[in-house]
Length: 419
Figure 1: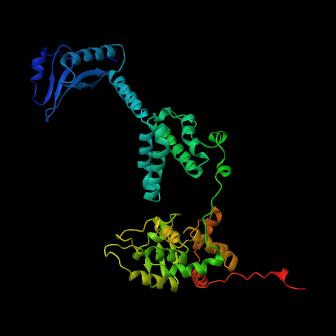
Figure 2: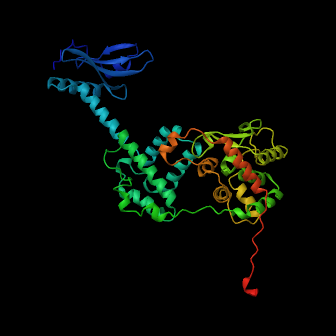
Figure 3: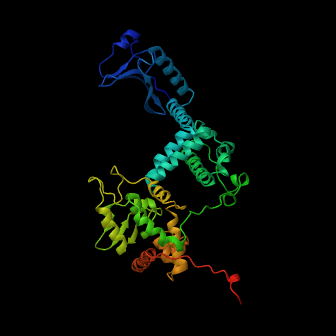
């Protein structure tokens, strides 16, 4: 490297430098090439003009007056010394700035990294509810322990400290939480916030040796359901009940739909001419559009609901008193008032039992009515139709079954009879 010495300007005093306001490059003397750069907006900064390896280069030395004239001259002398030693001071400066930026980036906390991860990925999540669940689980369980830790410092013991208290008592939540922590830490590795390597939140060959398998801990709790033989009697009581919650529950039973899908139903989704309820994928658990055939009973119920008092500015079919969507407890509260020991979601089990035990309809058809995803990926790839017209017949039979009240079987005491 070679530093061609430029002509040395007259040495200026600090006071003279302070008075430089005209736009342009003002050489201040004492060190060859040192100048004060004044922009058209009045901003002022130090520039050192040098020749490195035969090419003229300008090196920034900071803003004036934050960097004084004396400091600028000292920095300029040091830069020229490095050039004489064969070192490019501009590249060294860039390397130092890059290292500083990397250090700042890697100093992000786990919480800040998680927030960055969610900001990047939430657009691809299926619903705003999913995004809220992500944030809520981290806020409640992870942040108190590791939220303030630098993400580069998070280790397996920190993850275990978060998971162990809820692993056996809230296993489903804990399993989801572990996966979310793993995703955040993987994102941190790829973004350069922590060194690459084994993820401390990974399950296989990691936490699986330190925590009990979810299949051993999380015994699936089935939703309490009304037995198939008692559904007809229940429907008689339900149709006598008043209120929008009772009508929403009745519609959910007739359509075998989830309560959330029913509560979020809008009139725009109802096609009376085609006798179909078109539920958009954004409101479905599987994220796919779902068509529900509407029986005569379901359409009659909608006609009744349309005459009930409602606010004009709301498009919800089953409108809350203030015009919004019914709360997730409305249907449950309706059942409690009726004294029934079951939950709204259990009626989907009742429907499934009816289809399996009382009809000859194929299992796949009942699964489609329930909008269940096909677990076999090969089968799912070949499945194109949704058996809609055949499902229409099945839902008609289901509505007819709901209208029948089955009497309990009479038990005869054979011991009282003589042979």
